[in-house]
Image (tube, rainbow, N blue to C red; front, side):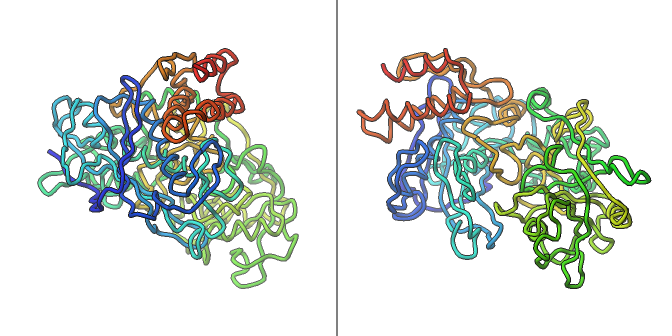
Amino acid sequence: MNKTLLAVSLALAGVVAFAAPAQAARLVLLNVDAAGEGLNDPTAKAPVGANPGTTVGAQRRIAYEFAMGLWGAVLKSPVDVKIYASFQPLACTASAGVLGSAGPNWIDHDFPGAPLPNTWYHSALADSLAGRDLDPDAADPADIASRFNSNLGTTGCLETSSWYYGLDGNTPAGAINFLDVVMHEIGHGLGFSGFLDKTTGALFFDGETSRSDVYTHSVLDNVRNLRFDDKRMTDGLRATAMMTPGRLVWGGQTVTSTAALVLSHMLTFQVTAPGGIAGSYGYGTADFGPVAGAGNFSGTVKQADDGTAPNADGCQAFTPGFFTGQIALVDRGTCGFGVKALNAQNAGATGVIIANVSTSGSPTVAPGMTGGSAANTIPTISLNVADGDTFRANVGSGLTVAFVEDASKLQGADTNGHMLLYSPTVVAPGSTFSHFDTSVSPNAVMEPAISASLNANFMLDMTPSLMSDIGWGRNGGTARFRKCTTDVPIEQPGGLIPGANVLAADAVCSSNVAPGAYQACMTNFADALVSASMVTGAQDSSFRQCIRR
């Protein structure tokens, strides 16, 4: 049985396939943009960052091909994975917006080869497990539907940003790496998403019965130590867990093992003075600005006063230099988190603490924060109401804070080493449950917001491991192209994908440059791998030997 989740009723404008090596998944791009738009935009554009395209549309398609090549090299499937792709206006404001969205176009359950009975599977994964196309609908053929924001960088939509279509990870300041976004969205379509109701906690209902899905099956409530689809987990218990930071975790063993290789040690946020309130405090994180840590968040705290009632909310510009060299303590409310942080930053603050107040609700939990932009360049954290009151009462008594590393714990995991999933106190329909938490450090590809520190062309962190946990097979061995075997491993422990990069590069250079320019095109990718320290000298040598054949 199956059910369409995302109906895309556009005529196909073109089809591009990634020619994968044996056993690798073959991803097929179904371009549903109209002529002259989106992936077909004819606007001239000089090649950038190893992307040889000479128009905006060509660079977008090539970046998408490269992402398909990376995922296809990592995962196994005997069945093509077909993906709708288009550029459309998505929800956006001048300072924040949706970059992309994607999900399965079909879902299936109880097919031959299904590991879990009575459980929904994403179409691409179901096809891979069944060994055949379970949804051969010629009128609606895709397994995954993806969309990307066509208005980014225009008036009213992330006005100071732009798309970067390079494939080398060298994203200019203020730009957004399109490849990272595509890798993230394809990840959702391949299986990094659950189908339950984020507000009520109800499992997916298809009009006949309610069933769990393979992603939801591996999610744990770490307070009750129960899987999310355990019969003892009621809808209400699931809803509560999804709105309680720190309670929602990934229970799959492959991710847990990989997290220990990837994640930084836990940082505890501490008051160092005055002595009467010294100790560790819980905090919320932001999806904008750098991650707060031992190297960038310590010093004296100063109370915000922007001169306009309510004076401590930081919604108006502060006097220049008001916070120079200090950490700003700002009350929650009136305006967005990103606005407050940027006003403090412009007044010289080195960090920002946004404290809940009794009128902002959620008295026991420090909230996660969204709404910033690339302009936010200092770390921002939040406090719950009680801790906020404590800080306000002591800010005039030499209040100082710092982050301290705890080598016994992992940043972004619970005390059992399980990866935290995103569970803000207020449900974010497109983000809650189906992402790693924003507390993860280093930043992960499948967090709810794309970070400038990502390089999804080289590093997929715990995401391939999650694919293993839900049933995908993964390719091992080394990269082989043009009947030549390199010493570059497809994937290494911890999510590094140097060999996948080699194979994706071969696909791009074979399809998008003149035959005489192939070696120069591939050499650009070889140089990028060396520059990023992704290959050893011997591996680089074997790669270049294959390029010259």
